[in-house]
Image 1 (tube, rainbow, N blue to C red):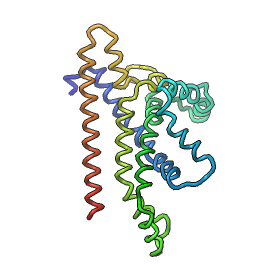
Image 2: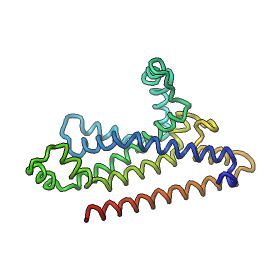
Image 3: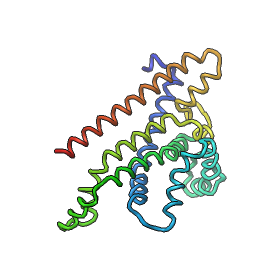
Length: 231
């Protein structure tokens, strides 16, 4: 692949995979927690939390990126604190691209897991509790295996969204080759320069292959989990 791709194209592919994997891994734990909270919780402000979680799906990606820049930029309230306290800078860094992708993919992850949690038969959990299992054991041995297909589907959706994210990423971290230039940004750049059509087509084909591979992996994992649950 390194012979077929130019060095800058290979760098964009590698960075996209790194950003997408980081964003998905960072979103998984909070996404499961928020999904459980929205599916099972009863508390004031639940509708507001639900709206905030799904807000990135409604807002234009550029607006989301700008809000991240305002909040997590070096002069922003959160970004300034991180820089002054820990020396961490997110804006115009690949870690900022991972943050932007995580924010954009988070609603898809939460929604998939929430639907899976809501489909769980509560009688199975009640039966486990009646037999003396503590809540943590009920969750680990009953609830979690039942919602695992939804977790897998949500993670794949978040990964695919991260691989294709453009608007929020380019607004928050710009389009710096080797640092923040992901596949979508590289494709956009190549379409703006003379003679870049071949490179744009190569990266487009790679994006299609990666997306199809993610879908195939999702189907395979879902079937494997279903077979284990049936057994």
